[in-house]
Length: 70
Image (tube, helix red, strand yellow):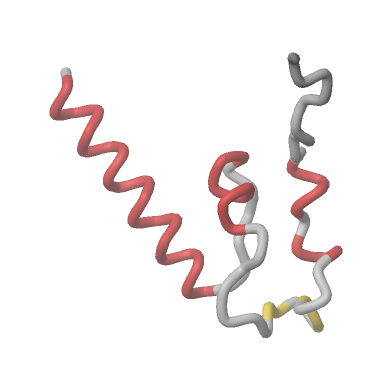
């Protein structure tokens, strides 16, 4: 039996912080972004400063990995 249904694929508009319940007055009041995984995959802007650090570290690690494999 095959699965006819494919998973929902998020777009940048779907994970916009302005649509989040934790977003207020241009700031994120959440400890951890509930859409972080999708935002990282889509390279969508991140407001939460803790999650920005995760994004920066991930980009740095990927850059170092690319350089190592060249």
